[in-house]
Image (cartoon, rainbow, N blue to C red):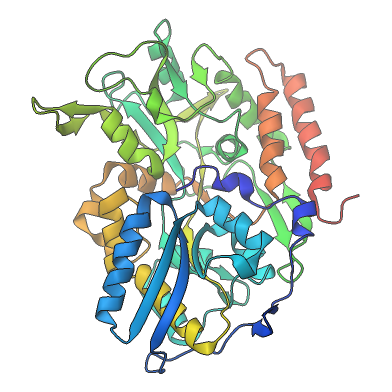
Length: 454
Protein backbone atom coordinates (compact mmCIF):
# COMPACT_ATOMS: atom_id res chain seq x y z
CA UNK A 1 0.00 0.00 0.00
CA UNK A 2 1.21 3.44 -0.75
CA UNK A 3 1.83 5.08 2.58
CA UNK A 4 0.88 8.58 1.54
CA UNK A 5 -2.55 7.73 0.19
CA UNK A 6 -4.19 9.65 3.05
CA UNK A 7 -2.47 12.91 2.11
CA UNK A 8 -4.50 12.79 -1.09
CA UNK A 9 -7.82 12.59 0.76
CA UNK A 10 -9.12 15.29 -1.54
CA UNK A 11 -7.04 17.39 -3.87
CA UNK A 12 -7.27 21.19 -3.64
CA UNK A 13 -10.19 22.99 -5.17
CA UNK A 14 -8.23 24.18 -8.22
CA UNK A 15 -7.61 20.56 -9.23
CA UNK A 16 -11.18 19.50 -8.53
CA UNK A 17 -12.31 22.34 -10.73
CA UNK A 18 -10.31 20.87 -13.60
CA UNK A 19 -12.16 17.54 -13.37
CA UNK A 20 -15.23 16.70 -15.42
CA UNK A 21 -18.04 16.02 -12.95
CA UNK A 22 -20.42 14.65 -15.57
CA UNK A 23 -21.26 10.98 -15.49
CA UNK A 24 -21.00 10.63 -19.26
CA UNK A 25 -17.83 10.91 -21.33
CA UNK A 26 -17.53 10.84 -25.10
CA UNK A 27 -14.47 9.16 -26.58
CA UNK A 28 -14.30 8.96 -30.37
CA UNK A 29 -18.04 9.40 -30.51
CA UNK A 30 -18.82 6.58 -28.04
CA UNK A 31 -20.49 7.42 -24.77
CA UNK A 32 -18.95 6.08 -21.57
CA UNK A 33 -21.91 5.81 -19.27
CA UNK A 34 -23.19 3.46 -16.60
CA UNK A 35 -23.88 0.40 -18.71
CA UNK A 36 -26.61 -2.06 -17.86
CA UNK A 37 -25.70 -4.72 -15.32
CA UNK A 38 -24.95 -8.12 -16.77
CA UNK A 39 -25.98 -11.59 -15.67
CA UNK A 40 -23.33 -14.31 -15.64
CA UNK A 41 -24.88 -15.98 -18.68
CA UNK A 42 -24.58 -12.81 -20.81
CA UNK A 43 -22.69 -13.56 -24.05
CA UNK A 44 -19.62 -11.42 -23.55
CA UNK A 45 -17.10 -13.76 -25.20
CA UNK A 46 -14.36 -12.21 -27.29
CA UNK A 47 -10.97 -10.51 -27.24
CA UNK A 48 -10.27 -7.62 -24.88
CA UNK A 49 -7.42 -5.30 -24.01
CA UNK A 50 -7.75 -4.29 -20.36
CA UNK A 51 -5.56 -1.84 -18.48
CA UNK A 52 -5.08 -2.59 -14.77
CA UNK A 53 -3.39 -0.40 -12.13
CA UNK A 54 -2.15 -2.06 -8.93
CA UNK A 55 0.62 -1.54 -6.40
CA UNK A 56 4.08 -2.65 -7.49
CA UNK A 57 4.06 -5.28 -4.73
CA UNK A 58 1.23 -7.22 -6.37
CA UNK A 59 1.89 -6.52 -10.06
CA UNK A 60 3.32 -9.95 -10.87
CA UNK A 61 0.74 -11.72 -8.71
CA UNK A 62 -2.09 -9.83 -10.42
CA UNK A 63 -0.77 -10.86 -13.83
CA UNK A 64 -0.81 -14.52 -12.79
CA UNK A 65 -4.30 -14.17 -11.30
CA UNK A 66 -5.61 -12.71 -14.55
CA UNK A 67 -4.04 -15.62 -16.41
CA UNK A 68 -5.86 -17.99 -14.05
CA UNK A 69 -9.14 -16.16 -14.73
CA UNK A 70 -8.68 -16.61 -18.49
CA UNK A 71 -7.78 -20.28 -18.03
CA UNK A 72 -11.01 -20.79 -16.08
CA UNK A 73 -12.97 -18.78 -18.67
CA UNK A 74 -11.58 -19.75 -22.10
CA UNK A 75 -14.24 -17.76 -23.93
CA UNK A 76 -12.19 -14.66 -23.11
CA UNK A 77 -8.95 -13.66 -24.80
CA UNK A 78 -7.63 -10.94 -22.53
CA UNK A 79 -4.52 -8.93 -23.16
CA UNK A 80 -3.92 -7.39 -19.76
CA UNK A 81 -1.67 -4.35 -19.42
CA UNK A 82 -0.92 -4.50 -15.68
CA UNK A 83 0.89 -1.37 -14.56
CA UNK A 84 2.47 -0.53 -11.20
CA UNK A 85 0.54 2.53 -9.99
CA UNK A 86 0.09 3.32 -6.30
CA UNK A 87 -3.37 3.85 -4.82
CA UNK A 88 -2.77 7.58 -4.39
CA UNK A 89 -1.46 8.05 -7.92
CA UNK A 90 -4.26 5.93 -9.34
CA UNK A 91 -6.81 8.35 -7.90
CA UNK A 92 -5.06 11.51 -9.04
CA UNK A 93 -4.45 10.07 -12.52
CA UNK A 94 -8.08 9.00 -12.92
CA UNK A 95 -9.29 12.43 -11.87
CA UNK A 96 -7.01 14.18 -14.34
CA UNK A 97 -8.10 12.03 -17.29
CA UNK A 98 -10.70 9.32 -16.83
CA UNK A 99 -10.68 8.39 -20.52
CA UNK A 100 -6.97 7.53 -20.42
CA UNK A 101 -7.16 5.86 -17.02
CA UNK A 102 -7.15 2.19 -16.16
CA UNK A 103 -10.19 -0.01 -16.75
CA UNK A 104 -9.59 -1.61 -13.34
CA UNK A 105 -7.69 0.16 -10.57
CA UNK A 106 -7.03 0.06 -6.83
CA UNK A 107 -7.63 3.08 -4.60
CA UNK A 108 -8.15 4.05 -0.96
CA UNK A 109 -11.70 4.24 0.38
CA UNK A 110 -11.53 7.95 1.19
CA UNK A 111 -11.38 8.64 -2.56
CA UNK A 112 -14.67 6.89 -3.39
CA UNK A 113 -16.90 9.96 -3.64
CA UNK A 114 -14.44 11.95 -5.71
CA UNK A 115 -14.05 9.13 -8.19
CA UNK A 116 -17.80 8.74 -8.49
CA UNK A 117 -18.26 12.49 -9.01
CA UNK A 118 -15.56 12.48 -11.69
CA UNK A 119 -17.31 9.66 -13.55
CA UNK A 120 -14.56 7.13 -12.87
CA UNK A 121 -16.91 4.69 -11.13
CA UNK A 122 -20.41 3.45 -11.80
CA UNK A 123 -22.91 2.02 -9.32
CA UNK A 124 -22.69 -1.75 -8.86
CA UNK A 125 -26.01 -3.61 -8.64
CA UNK A 126 -27.59 -7.01 -9.23
CA UNK A 127 -25.38 -10.11 -8.96
CA UNK A 128 -22.20 -8.10 -8.64
CA UNK A 129 -23.53 -6.20 -5.65
CA UNK A 130 -24.92 -9.40 -4.14
CA UNK A 131 -21.46 -10.98 -4.41
CA UNK A 132 -19.85 -8.04 -2.60
CA UNK A 133 -22.37 -8.05 0.26
CA UNK A 134 -22.40 -11.83 0.71
CA UNK A 135 -18.64 -12.34 0.66
CA UNK A 136 -17.15 -9.34 2.47
CA UNK A 137 -17.24 -7.86 5.95
CA UNK A 138 -19.98 -5.33 6.64
CA UNK A 139 -17.47 -2.54 7.34
CA UNK A 140 -15.70 -3.09 4.03
CA UNK A 141 -19.01 -3.03 2.15
CA UNK A 142 -19.80 0.25 3.90
CA UNK A 143 -16.41 1.58 2.82
CA UNK A 144 -17.24 0.69 -0.79
CA UNK A 145 -20.65 2.40 -0.65
CA UNK A 146 -22.10 5.87 -0.92
CA UNK A 147 -25.59 6.93 0.04
CA UNK A 148 -27.19 5.47 -3.09
CA UNK A 149 -25.36 2.16 -3.39
CA UNK A 150 -22.11 0.22 -3.87
CA UNK A 151 -19.43 1.64 -6.17
CA UNK A 152 -16.38 -0.60 -5.73
CA UNK A 153 -15.15 -4.07 -4.77
CA UNK A 154 -13.54 -4.42 -1.29
CA UNK A 155 -9.93 -5.57 -1.59
CA UNK A 156 -8.13 -5.20 1.76
CA UNK A 157 -9.02 -4.35 5.35
CA UNK A 158 -5.62 -3.16 6.52
CA UNK A 159 -5.33 0.55 5.74
CA UNK A 160 -4.50 1.50 9.32
CA UNK A 161 -1.43 1.73 11.53
CA UNK A 162 -0.05 0.08 14.63
CA UNK A 163 3.25 -0.28 16.52
CA UNK A 164 6.22 -2.29 15.30
CA UNK A 165 9.10 -2.65 17.76
CA UNK A 166 12.49 -4.27 18.27
CA UNK A 167 12.10 -7.10 20.78
CA UNK A 168 15.75 -6.73 21.78
CA UNK A 169 14.82 -3.33 23.27
CA UNK A 170 11.25 -3.77 24.50
CA UNK A 171 9.25 -6.64 25.83
CA UNK A 172 5.49 -6.83 25.23
CA UNK A 173 4.72 -5.28 28.63
CA UNK A 174 6.73 -2.14 27.87
CA UNK A 175 5.05 -1.06 24.63
CA UNK A 176 1.67 -0.15 26.10
CA UNK A 177 2.69 3.30 27.31
CA UNK A 178 4.65 6.02 25.50
CA UNK A 179 6.28 7.32 28.70
CA UNK A 180 7.61 3.86 29.49
CA UNK A 181 8.90 3.50 25.95
CA UNK A 182 10.66 6.87 25.94
CA UNK A 183 12.21 6.38 29.38
CA UNK A 184 13.64 3.05 28.25
CA UNK A 185 15.62 4.63 25.39
CA UNK A 186 16.93 7.74 27.14
CA UNK A 187 20.68 7.95 26.74
CA UNK A 188 20.76 5.40 23.89
CA UNK A 189 21.13 5.84 20.14
CA UNK A 190 17.59 4.58 19.56
CA UNK A 191 14.42 6.61 18.97
CA UNK A 192 10.69 6.15 18.58
CA UNK A 193 9.85 6.79 14.93
CA UNK A 194 6.39 8.35 14.86
CA UNK A 195 5.07 10.91 12.35
CA UNK A 196 2.49 12.46 14.67
CA UNK A 197 4.09 15.91 14.28
CA UNK A 198 4.82 15.66 10.58
CA UNK A 199 1.78 13.93 9.07
CA UNK A 200 -1.82 14.75 9.94
CA UNK A 201 -2.95 11.18 9.36
CA UNK A 202 -0.85 10.16 12.38
CA UNK A 203 -1.51 13.39 14.31
CA UNK A 204 -5.16 12.37 14.41
CA UNK A 205 -4.27 9.39 16.61
CA UNK A 206 -3.99 11.70 19.65
CA UNK A 207 -7.35 13.36 19.02
CA UNK A 208 -9.07 10.06 18.23
CA UNK A 209 -7.82 8.52 21.50
CA UNK A 210 -10.13 6.90 24.05
CA UNK A 211 -9.75 6.38 27.75
CA UNK A 212 -7.60 3.35 28.46
CA UNK A 213 -9.54 0.06 28.55
CA UNK A 214 -12.73 1.74 27.27
CA UNK A 215 -12.87 1.12 23.53
CA UNK A 216 -16.66 1.31 23.70
CA UNK A 217 -16.53 5.01 24.51
CA UNK A 218 -16.49 7.81 21.97
CA UNK A 219 -13.12 9.15 20.96
CA UNK A 220 -11.90 12.40 22.53
CA UNK A 221 -12.64 14.40 19.38
CA UNK A 222 -14.36 14.18 16.04
CA UNK A 223 -14.17 16.06 12.79
CA UNK A 224 -16.86 15.19 10.25
CA UNK A 225 -17.24 16.77 6.83
CA UNK A 226 -20.40 16.88 4.72
CA UNK A 227 -19.72 16.18 1.06
CA UNK A 228 -22.26 16.77 -1.69
CA UNK A 229 -22.00 13.53 -3.68
CA UNK A 230 -23.38 15.20 -6.79
CA UNK A 231 -21.10 18.22 -7.00
CA UNK A 232 -18.14 16.94 -5.01
CA UNK A 233 -18.22 20.08 -2.84
CA UNK A 234 -17.72 20.18 0.93
CA UNK A 235 -20.60 22.14 2.39
CA UNK A 236 -20.03 22.09 6.17
CA UNK A 237 -18.13 20.44 8.99
CA UNK A 238 -18.52 19.53 12.66
CA UNK A 239 -15.24 19.71 14.55
CA UNK A 240 -14.21 19.21 18.18
CA UNK A 241 -10.46 18.83 17.58
CA UNK A 242 -10.13 22.50 18.51
CA UNK A 243 -12.22 22.28 21.69
CA UNK A 244 -11.40 21.36 25.31
CA UNK A 245 -10.77 17.69 24.59
CA UNK A 246 -8.42 18.76 21.83
CA UNK A 247 -6.31 20.38 24.52
CA UNK A 248 -5.89 16.94 26.13
CA UNK A 249 -4.56 15.62 22.82
CA UNK A 250 -2.27 18.62 22.40
CA UNK A 251 -0.80 18.05 25.87
CA UNK A 252 -0.17 14.44 24.90
CA UNK A 253 1.70 15.53 21.77
CA UNK A 254 4.06 17.60 23.95
CA UNK A 255 5.62 14.37 25.19
CA UNK A 256 6.76 13.31 21.73
CA UNK A 257 8.07 16.78 20.83
CA UNK A 258 11.42 15.81 22.35
CA UNK A 259 13.46 15.31 19.19
CA UNK A 260 16.20 13.57 21.17
CA UNK A 261 13.81 10.66 21.67
CA UNK A 262 11.30 10.87 18.80
CA UNK A 263 11.94 11.08 15.06
CA UNK A 264 9.26 12.36 12.67
CA UNK A 265 9.69 9.47 10.29
CA UNK A 266 8.30 5.97 9.88
CA UNK A 267 10.89 4.18 7.82
CA UNK A 268 11.40 0.61 9.03
CA UNK A 269 14.86 0.75 7.46
CA UNK A 270 15.84 2.55 10.68
CA UNK A 271 15.58 -0.71 12.61
CA UNK A 272 19.01 -2.10 13.48
CA UNK A 273 19.63 -5.29 11.47
CA UNK A 274 18.81 -8.54 13.20
CA UNK A 275 22.23 -9.80 12.18
CA UNK A 276 25.24 -7.49 12.24
CA UNK A 277 25.68 -4.01 13.62
CA UNK A 278 24.25 -0.61 12.78
CA UNK A 279 25.80 2.82 13.08
CA UNK A 280 24.02 6.04 13.91
CA UNK A 281 20.50 6.45 15.21
CA UNK A 282 18.27 3.38 15.04
CA UNK A 283 14.59 2.71 15.63
CA UNK A 284 13.42 1.16 18.86
CA UNK A 285 9.86 1.23 17.49
CA UNK A 286 8.05 2.53 14.41
CA UNK A 287 4.40 3.48 13.99
CA UNK A 288 3.40 2.34 10.51
CA UNK A 289 1.13 -0.13 8.72
CA UNK A 290 1.00 -3.63 7.33
CA UNK A 291 2.50 -2.38 4.07
CA UNK A 292 5.85 -2.23 5.92
CA UNK A 293 5.56 -5.56 7.73
CA UNK A 294 7.60 -7.73 5.36
CA UNK A 295 10.39 -5.15 5.13
CA UNK A 296 10.49 -4.78 8.92
CA UNK A 297 10.45 -8.54 9.48
CA UNK A 298 13.36 -8.99 7.08
CA UNK A 299 15.28 -6.05 8.51
CA UNK A 300 15.09 -7.56 11.99
CA UNK A 301 15.46 -11.08 10.68
CA UNK A 302 17.50 -13.75 12.47
CA UNK A 303 19.46 -15.85 9.99
CA UNK A 304 20.77 -19.39 10.11
CA UNK A 305 24.28 -20.37 9.03
CA UNK A 306 23.10 -20.49 5.42
CA UNK A 307 21.81 -16.92 5.49
CA UNK A 308 18.12 -17.85 5.59
CA UNK A 309 15.79 -15.87 7.86
CA UNK A 310 14.39 -18.31 10.42
CA UNK A 311 12.90 -15.81 12.87
CA UNK A 312 12.79 -12.09 13.56
CA UNK A 313 13.19 -9.64 16.41
CA UNK A 314 10.11 -7.80 15.10
CA UNK A 315 7.30 -7.32 17.58
CA UNK A 316 3.86 -5.94 16.74
CA UNK A 317 1.35 -4.31 19.08
CA UNK A 318 -1.66 -2.04 19.11
CA UNK A 319 -1.00 1.66 19.62
CA UNK A 320 0.27 2.66 23.10
CA UNK A 321 -1.28 5.03 25.65
CA UNK A 322 -0.34 8.54 26.70
CA UNK A 323 -1.10 10.15 30.06
CA UNK A 324 -2.51 13.62 30.75
CA UNK A 325 -3.32 14.49 34.35
CA UNK A 326 -4.43 11.36 36.14
CA UNK A 327 -5.91 9.64 33.06
CA UNK A 328 -4.39 7.42 30.40
CA UNK A 329 -5.63 7.61 26.82
CA UNK A 330 -5.21 4.82 24.30
CA UNK A 331 -4.05 6.28 20.99
CA UNK A 332 -6.64 5.98 18.26
CA UNK A 333 -6.13 5.60 14.53
CA UNK A 334 -8.01 5.60 11.27
CA UNK A 335 -9.38 2.36 9.90
CA UNK A 336 -9.34 2.18 6.15
CA UNK A 337 -9.86 -0.17 3.23
CA UNK A 338 -8.41 -0.54 -0.22
CA UNK A 339 -10.98 -0.93 -2.96
CA UNK A 340 -10.95 -2.06 -6.58
CA UNK A 341 -12.82 0.12 -9.04
CA UNK A 342 -14.05 -0.46 -12.58
CA UNK A 343 -14.22 2.49 -14.95
CA UNK A 344 -17.46 2.88 -16.96
CA UNK A 345 -16.85 1.15 -20.28
CA UNK A 346 -17.70 1.93 -23.90
CA UNK A 347 -19.78 -1.21 -24.44
CA UNK A 348 -22.00 -3.50 -22.45
CA UNK A 349 -19.71 -6.46 -23.20
CA UNK A 350 -16.61 -4.66 -21.91
CA UNK A 351 -18.53 -3.65 -18.79
CA UNK A 352 -19.46 -7.28 -18.17
CA UNK A 353 -15.94 -8.62 -18.60
CA UNK A 354 -14.27 -5.91 -16.51
CA UNK A 355 -16.73 -6.40 -13.68
CA UNK A 356 -16.33 -10.16 -13.75
CA UNK A 357 -12.56 -9.79 -13.69
CA UNK A 358 -12.72 -7.36 -10.74
CA UNK A 359 -15.06 -9.76 -8.95
CA UNK A 360 -12.53 -12.56 -9.45
CA UNK A 361 -9.54 -10.45 -8.35
CA UNK A 362 -11.35 -9.65 -5.09
CA UNK A 363 -12.58 -13.19 -4.51
CA UNK A 364 -11.62 -15.42 -1.58
CA UNK A 365 -8.89 -17.26 -3.47
CA UNK A 366 -7.24 -14.10 -4.78
CA UNK A 367 -7.42 -12.29 -1.44
CA UNK A 368 -5.88 -15.32 0.29
CA UNK A 369 -3.10 -15.45 -2.31
CA UNK A 370 -2.47 -11.74 -1.79
CA UNK A 371 -2.18 -12.27 1.95
CA UNK A 372 0.40 -15.03 1.53
CA UNK A 373 2.35 -12.94 -0.98
CA UNK A 374 2.44 -9.52 0.74
CA UNK A 375 0.55 -9.92 4.07
CA UNK A 376 -2.37 -7.74 2.98
CA UNK A 377 -5.40 -8.24 5.21
CA UNK A 378 -8.46 -9.68 3.44
CA UNK A 379 -12.00 -8.31 3.52
CA UNK A 380 -13.42 -11.61 2.34
CA UNK A 381 -15.24 -13.29 5.22
CA UNK A 382 -13.80 -16.76 4.63
CA UNK A 383 -10.30 -15.58 3.82
CA UNK A 384 -10.17 -13.48 6.98
CA UNK A 385 -10.85 -16.67 9.01
CA UNK A 386 -7.87 -18.45 7.49
CA UNK A 387 -5.62 -19.66 10.36
CA UNK A 388 -2.59 -18.01 8.78
CA UNK A 389 -4.41 -14.68 8.66
CA UNK A 390 -5.60 -14.97 12.25
CA UNK A 391 -2.11 -15.77 13.53
CA UNK A 392 -0.27 -13.08 11.57
CA UNK A 393 1.41 -10.75 14.14
CA UNK A 394 0.84 -7.55 12.18
CA UNK A 395 -2.79 -8.24 11.35
CA UNK A 396 -3.41 -9.39 14.93
CA UNK A 397 -2.06 -6.07 16.22
CA UNK A 398 -4.19 -4.21 13.70
CA UNK A 399 -7.25 -6.19 14.83
CA UNK A 400 -6.63 -5.13 18.45
CA UNK A 401 -6.17 -1.53 17.35
CA UNK A 402 -9.46 -1.76 15.45
CA UNK A 403 -11.29 -1.44 18.78
CA UNK A 404 -9.84 2.06 19.17
CA UNK A 405 -10.02 3.04 15.52
CA UNK A 406 -12.33 5.38 13.62
CA UNK A 407 -13.42 4.53 10.10
CA UNK A 408 -12.01 7.10 7.73
CA UNK A 409 -14.52 9.21 5.86
CA UNK A 410 -14.42 11.92 3.21
CA UNK A 411 -12.47 15.06 4.05
CA UNK A 412 -10.50 17.82 2.29
CA UNK A 413 -6.88 16.84 1.80
CA UNK A 414 -5.79 20.14 3.32
CA UNK A 415 -7.45 19.16 6.60
CA UNK A 416 -4.58 16.76 7.25
CA UNK A 417 -2.16 19.55 6.43
CA UNK A 418 -3.93 21.73 9.01
CA UNK A 419 -3.48 19.01 11.63
CA UNK A 420 0.18 18.64 10.70
CA UNK A 421 0.73 22.39 11.04
CA UNK A 422 -0.93 22.47 14.46
CA UNK A 423 1.00 19.46 15.77
CA UNK A 424 4.27 20.76 14.38
CA UNK A 425 3.80 23.98 16.35
CA UNK A 426 3.78 22.11 19.67
CA UNK A 427 7.05 21.97 21.57
CA UNK A 428 8.04 20.12 24.71
CA UNK A 429 7.84 23.47 26.55
CA UNK A 430 4.50 24.71 25.18
CA UNK A 431 2.27 26.25 27.85
CA UNK A 432 -1.48 25.61 28.11
CA UNK A 433 -2.07 29.12 26.79
CA UNK A 434 0.13 28.44 23.78
CA UNK A 435 -1.57 25.12 23.10
CA UNK A 436 -4.98 26.81 23.30
CA UNK A 437 -3.85 29.40 20.76
CA UNK A 438 -2.51 26.70 18.43
CA UNK A 439 -5.89 24.95 18.54
CA UNK A 440 -7.70 28.24 17.97
CA UNK A 441 -5.59 28.92 14.90
CA UNK A 442 -6.36 25.43 13.65
CA UNK A 443 -10.11 25.83 14.15
CA UNK A 444 -10.20 29.32 12.62
CA UNK A 445 -8.68 27.89 9.46
CA UNK A 446 -11.23 25.15 8.93
CA UNK A 447 -13.73 27.41 7.22
CA UNK A 448 -11.15 28.07 4.51
CA UNK A 449 -11.28 24.39 3.62
CA UNK A 450 -14.92 24.48 2.58
CA UNK A 451 -15.49 24.26 -1.17
CA UNK A 452 -17.25 27.65 -1.32
CA UNK A 453 -14.67 29.49 0.82
CA UNK A 454 -13.41 32.76 -0.57
